Length: 108
Image (tube, rainbow, N blue to C red; front, side):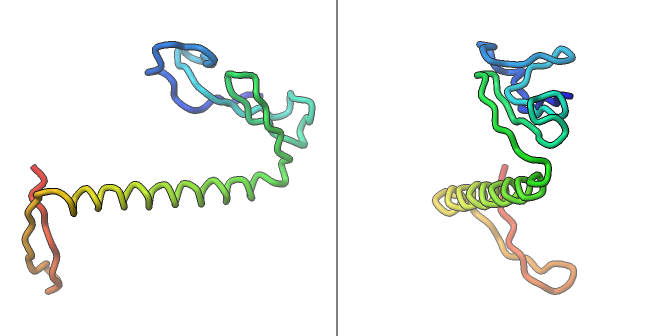
């Protein structure tokens, strides 16, 4: 079995991509049909690179990837906050429904 991921529909060159159901993808996961059979999954890309991962390590791989995703989201938020701080945006403080104060920015 192969499962493709990494939407590449906007890639105008099309080198090293996989096509499935009129869509293009950068990556794939293979299970059951590779050299490791049902004991491993293989991550692969269009450059014929493979990374075998034993199925027992999948939860650890997921945890590692989720940590990276969490860090990336924090980095993105920090970049957005830096851009806001360095901009000429104006905001105002108002009292919310539960008598706490919040700041609203005119983002138009």
